[in-house]
Length: 325
Ligand SMILES: O=C(NC1CCCCC1)N[C@H]1[C@H](O)[C@@H](N2CCCCC2)[C@@H]2OC[C@H]1O2
Image 1 (tube, rainbow, N blue to C red):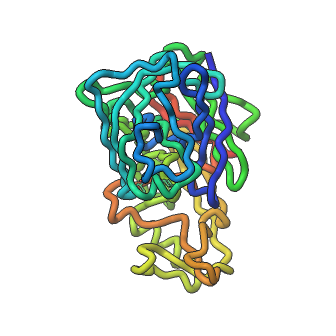
Image 2 (cartoon, rainbow, N blue to C red):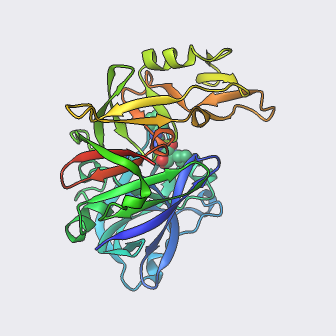
Image 3 (cartoon, rainbow, N blue to C red):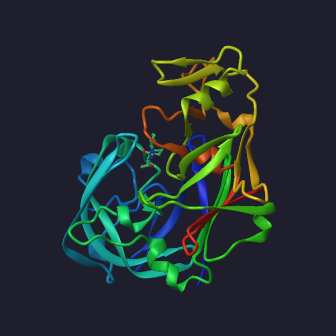
């Protein structure tokens, strides 16, 4: 089997949403595919009306294939301080033509304000490792884990784009989607993430590939060195990050992956991607797409990096492949 689904950017590439069919007859919800978490959760008829703000909701009672997972609950909190929790159904889930018949669909009974405010997203589809799924007492598998044995190849690829529709493919590598060769590097999934090591200016950086995080968060030394090249750039405590004049031309940001014998491959993030967004309506000052990881405790290669590459999440061989495009 295989699947292929469009990933549409929202609000200046802040997130990427994909249509997912749930239940019988199909209910289509736009979900944020998140390689940094492992719960498939949705706004639902169980979500308080006061917390629903235009989102499409899942109604298990109108799906003939939905079965309540008796006694199961879930509760998740994310690095940005957002959170959600609720109950669990098993139902049929289809992504880009790829169907999993008994997928844990986690219906929200509570969502935090940032989710309520995000009118375009009906929830998340977690694509990290099932070891960090939050369903209790019996942990559930991700969509990818459930699909993997049926896939032509045990992998999925992410091809996110700046201000344009990209694509997630499951079970195959589309050779027309990238240029040159794919450089592979081992994955450390001991924390449940797609962990890997890249080299930036000769310095090894161990981080995670996270489609659910908008920006890149790297060690202070690397970030400070990058912004030292931009006149007027500074760390601004009120914005909690590096800012600079919006008219600045930003240097490209490159990192090397798979640097073994073969020299590996280089991913180059165009400077324009690092000029992420204005800090206010005046458009004078802009917020950087590259920020420090010092308040996080882990380095994160988020959408700013991922949209500069074609990325293979290889679950069978536990490796990450990176290619230019
Ligand atoms: O919390 C993180 N990442 C952390 C960012 C700070 C540094 C540590 C990692 N990712 C979340 C992301 O922010 C959410 N957000 C919703 C609104 C639109 C933008 C996306 C979305 O929900 C959960 C996940 O994806």
